[in-house]
Amino acid sequence: MLRRTFSRERVVAGVLLLWLCVGVGGANTSAGQTVQELIEQAEQVLRAHSSYPDALAQVIPLYRAAIERNSEKALLHRRLAWACLEFGGLVEVGHTEWYRCGQQAAERALELDETNAEAHFLYAATTGLLSEQLPFWRISPKTPFELEQHLSRALALDPKHARALNMMGMLLNEVPGPLRLFLHGEKEQAEGYLTQAVDVDPTSTRLRLLLAEYYHEAGKPRLAAEQAKMILGMTAPKEPWLWHNKHKLDAQALLRNFETE
Image (cartoon, rainbow, N blue to C red):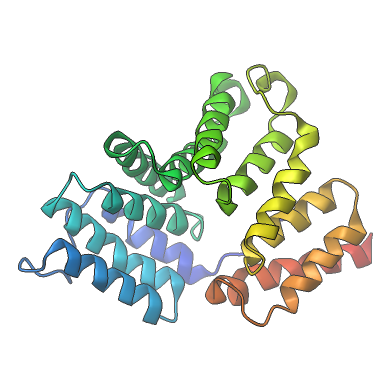
């Protein structure tokens, strides 16, 4: 895939905020706040803050504080897992710790409620990203199978879970031959999952970019360029900050790459 672009500010933020993975609570939370008030405060921050990384940095301690008050509420662990997954994707320094934080939260969410599709996706996503940090020879042959099982379970619970569809496609496409031993799906099915994800969530420039990169690597430049141009022309992207600061830049780089080939 094309190398992602990261600002210096986001790299620094990743270093400064690693303590959140092991810290307790947050400096801006009140001991008198209820779980529901903390959740509402976090959601308000996500809606109102113009900077996505800064918003994530603020909501993580809120979710942690809520978990301190009620560690048996699966939703809180799912929200923490999601925030750690997102933040880990925006930093280059310390992303492993963020993914591990997210994996632990997702695992706890599954212990509390195995019937939630998002929890299965979050566990698969964080586990998969953690495995990418390992050299090939240290990855267990059973890891891709475990990821496939969680994604299959997520899609059984919610057939229109766009990110689970996308990750299933990426998994089937990218797992190398020696690690495909236990997989049920085939590489030929990857494109179907990736396109279905975009059909389910058409304003997600995140998913369109991954589809564009798939087409590029599959030797389908026309289809890749179509997706890249749709990203650039998006008027109401699902994730505005990511579109403006990341996805649009990557789409432009992809199109420039075609011009030099």
